[in-house]
Image (cartoon, rainbow, N blue to C red; front, side, top):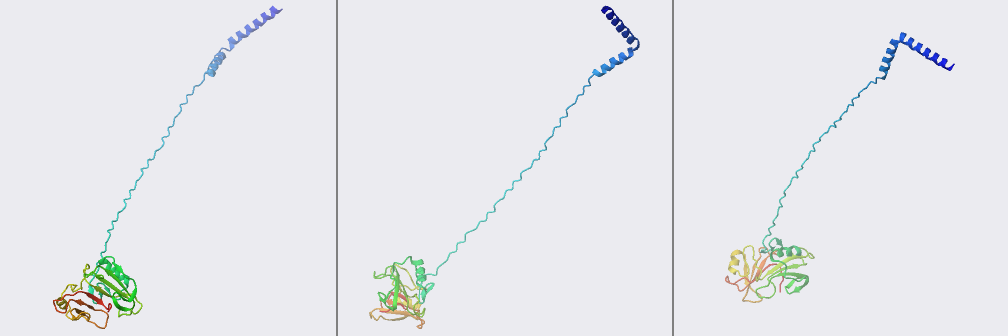
Length: 256
């Protein structure tokens, strides 16, 4: 029975095969073609497009500004002050008149003669300078006189009333010049050692008299305005034209 079933199955399979061959050849081809088409894999080649981004480089040129500092050259101006010569005058010494404050007069004389050799400070008016206007006198001195006694040049200051200032005002009121190692003269050129004749030529109003302390000596005076305390006077070796001036005093100064 089993063998018969197997044989029958084989026969049926053969019949089916034959039937398919008879009626479905074209379908097989179609099937074959379809399968072939189905199994064909389309190969798509994707070309990667590489985009190269070129970074735009902006070149900024640095502008260097060079500031040239303008150099201003300032020329130092030197002002030279020329002092009037320290001359022995009836109303003062050079540019400083009687009545000037002590500091002013001393500074002016110092500019020509250097620092004073002596300053007495304020002392009693009856002093080495003689009898001066009270209550006090001050002497500021330079150099050495020809005799070796006292000084060559002395500025005298007072607090007393003069025609220059009222009482209480410290001021220059006179000077004494005896020559020596300080070289001074009047604006006209008279100095210690000049003859009285030379003095009279320079000062036509000069008076020459006998000295009250020594009749052999002389006293000379130039005073064009007796109403004020401005004058020139001094001593001489005698009273003739050939005698020499031994001192020049200005202002009121001090008496004996």
